[in-house]
Length: 312
Image (tube, rainbow, N blue to C red; front, side, top):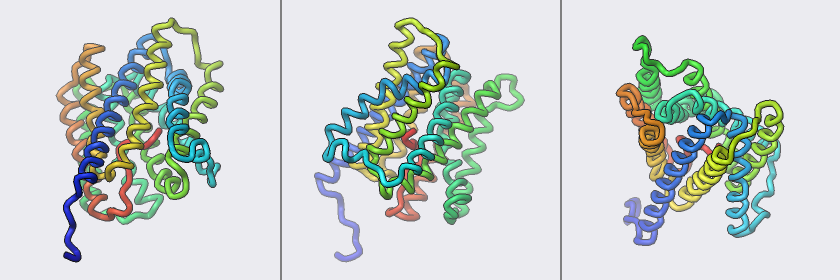
């Protein structure tokens, strides 16, 4: 009957289930990456070193992925090199802030603040893209910032380090900026090209920073950095692949499993259980992000965007 939505076929259902499985795997890999890099930070590794080694060990994984897809290295061609340069610069600044915050905050606090990116993405979409943002989405933004305030625990004497909070929020703002940029890049560029050129730029910039910030480490530390690089690349690829199997609105909510992973790994590996403020604030921030995804889905199915995990 015309105008009536048909039920998904068995094949469509299987693809959606596969997309969800890939997104859950992506959340797991991102959690592993954060956990092992946090452990590396306890061995004296700093943010520029994390940037370099994450890209160095992750780039071969990305290259294998490119070589196995239809078209091979030809998909890396670009019509917009300056757009890639801007996206890479913004992404590198964001990930440096992310890693520096990771060295200062607990895993749960770092992950929770990272998921304020959808809040900033809504604000940037209104300011830069001139999108019409309804009152429902502005309410979601306010709820998200209330969640941030709860996580910060002002006046309790147990607030996270201010420097870590500032860099965590700057990282989220940068991620939101990347999300807005990707809306335009994805119109002409293959996702493999976006990921590859960002990893390549990270190797170059990280390598230039090593003489000033790098230091020698033991084999265990380099092993942690290698694990972080592999996990980060697998997280990025499984995240991208999930979008080919299922709509963003279907898979994006599973990104918030990264907060659960941060709580588990923080408690298990670093004996750092989450505070009640972190849990409550995390729920408010997650609710804000999930509602934003749902409203975006309702607003225009043809313009779905990935609001929670931009490929940085």
